[in-house]
Image (cartoon, rainbow, N blue to C red; front, side, top):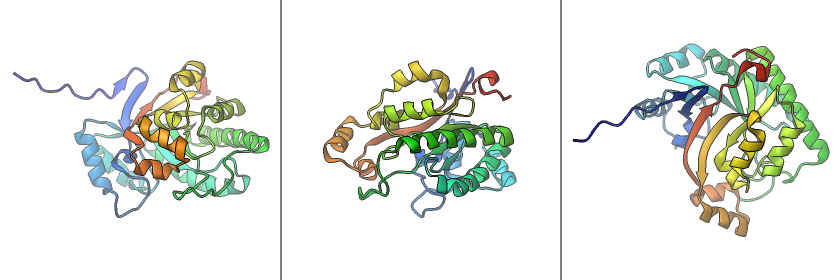
Length: 269
């Protein structure tokens, strides 16, 4: 006689397991090809998840009371917010900060304590470069200073910890680039969202990063990449957009909120 499957375990010690709109193909606040947010929340809860990342600002309701009602109705909780911005561009600071503050306010209102920041890509889906693929030494130093500045602001004003997300076709793609950012920044204020798929895309070693920089990993996105498509990326210099079309990114975005000990960040949980 078949037995019923065990319920999904979504917490273990200082970890909580969740998912994100990205797993439903949601990359933008609004897009006619994306599923409606209510359907996403319904299916997330039906799959057994209790935690979610907010995804692009504006996809889910941005009014805290309305968002709370939608989440409470389904027994869902928020692990973190999602923001996008260029820390290496001083002229983009004001725009970045305005966006991040909106995300931080909503994230804090849900009771979550992490903000995942994703850097912009340096080329578009056609493969054309919108800026040089490599940063100068001065830009790297500025990247680290801006990360610390933003992370301190988020911690002091919102009680939120900044975790920066590597991304294909961005200046934070390869393992040397990830390590450089960690070395240029202060672990009290800025740490790593380890995205296993994007690290693999950039030729990095996830286990090596965990072993050597484990204390800097505050949040995790669990993904996988198709090695056949990765080989095509290397051989044909494909853009990330083209790689996705060929099926390069596999699996769901599984978010893991690490919830480190308060003393590590110099703040209470």
